[in-house]
Length: 480
Image (tube, rainbow, N blue to C red; front, side):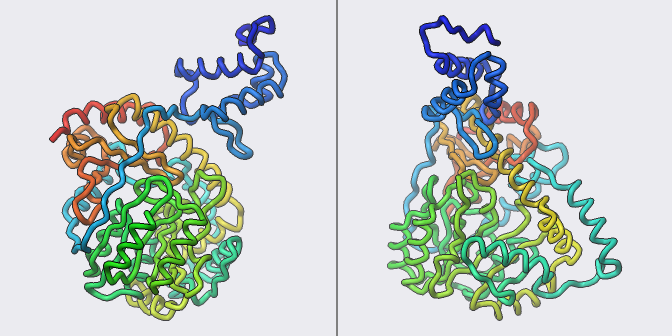
């Protein structure tokens, strides 16, 4: 490789290194999301100085071709020349009752079919599995706990785990009383309890559009009405649309994912999150924040939970370990604030308690340091997977497709265009051994028929890339 760099060439040495990286990318030797050789390794291979390589990498970063990640090195980015963000949708005039049950059931059935490429399930942990670490941890816990391991736990959660969570929120300047924090069976139960605390049948709840279909189904099951607020694919809810909706309707609560939205992957900056809380609390409207993806950010800093900006105590936080440690453990939590008494009562009525052995294992997983180490690895893999998926989609899908650029999480949102039917593509893909999620179920008002959500929270490999190629072929058969 050292022969590629010539000191007699009229170009500066760092420019030749830049050209070499470009050629490796064009040839497919270096793929989007992959790490470039370290400064020292590249300098040794090319027989140039480390500062020369560093200048080349920094220049490529300035041009948007590579990305520097703290304490991780430089990574090749996707060439987003043809990448177009999903379009802004119109604000709905009226809230609606919801009925998406049948299609949602079909999607869930597809996710769990054997030998299916699971683009349809948002399970980021699969990209950096924790099974071996948690297995070791659980064996240690069972030897310590003895017969207590099979008993019921405290109704509101395992005290040591709650203490760990409280300490973690202190990093954001959020003081949480132990009585305000309730451990739940995943974030879905936390969301259900939060909604039951602040609404009654027939009330209007504002949701993002597009919105995670589990929230839409939850609103349906509680007899509430949904009002969709358009979402910017970059930085979250359009506050002007929300302000208009608050003026026109008697909204009791909002359920928003301000850190990392599912399915678009938008990230609301802290200053805008503060404005959101101020707007809602000025109208005495409750914000229920779904923060399950907050720790899986690709941004330099994690988003500050919205509760940090509350002055009236009208923000409830819902989160879980399902996206960061173990989805099957079903351990989530709700910070209910002044609604804590209601939340504890609903928790007792709904499920009595959450698995003690699972909570105890996660507590030990955190205090050992393994949890945070794996989170760091998981974020790196997910970011690399995102870049690879975008690159593959650009090669395989119609050039008119509009692709989101997630700022975290594990899913990507694609608008195929008005000529395509995502429900038809869902059926065609399933017949070919691929599960996807049709965009139709991410709206209470039948929007996004032309959109699909794909997960990159998977162990990446040739099978995944071949499945994307196959999907690209099937898209052409999914025209209306």
